[in-house]
Image 1 (spheres, rainbow over the protein chains, first blue to last red):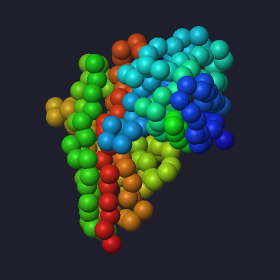
Image 2 (image 1 turned 180 degrees about the horizontal axis):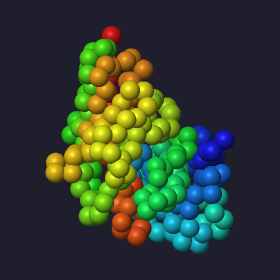
Image 3 (image 1 turned 90 degrees about the horizontal axis):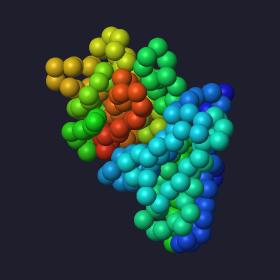
Image 4 (image 1 turned 30 degrees about the vertical axis):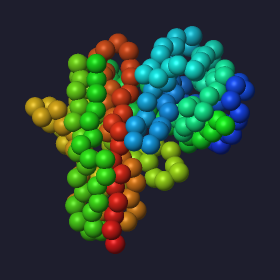
Length: 115
Length: 115
């Protein structure tokens, strides 16, 4: 089954304790990205990757890191989480076909609480 | 640069009546446009997409949307609302000709369906 898998689904952590949220897709997609969703703000892009070893900042990259060492994986790293990073996070992947980008496939989300 | 404006943050309809969720976009290139739905505590599911083929796009669950370039609009409609349609809906734009690929989300429209 084609899917994007995020782990963990729920996470409560303390300020300053490094954490990683994993994301993996099995569709051989070139493009992967991370979003955070906050009430009234929709989804905002944190980082994206056009392919292996190619990453770039989205709209709200401060406080986050990513890496793309393999095509299928795109982990999100919070080196020193703060309470303002409490949010719902989504990973997505997509592929370019026939000159236009196809729709993005989303993971189920990770609800992160930083206390 | 691209942007999306969802004109209503909340829409309330009675079951069996038509649904209209409004979306305006701006894009520097030929846009791809999407509508996603998010049910409470769930991930995002693609409803429909426009990628420069037919301007009237049919999606799942009886939804459709019409791409109007002159009005830069991509409104989502359904002839008859069902209780299961109660969810949050996101209009999304991507620039397919820019060389890079970034999805930009609207802030969302919460649809309530009254029995």
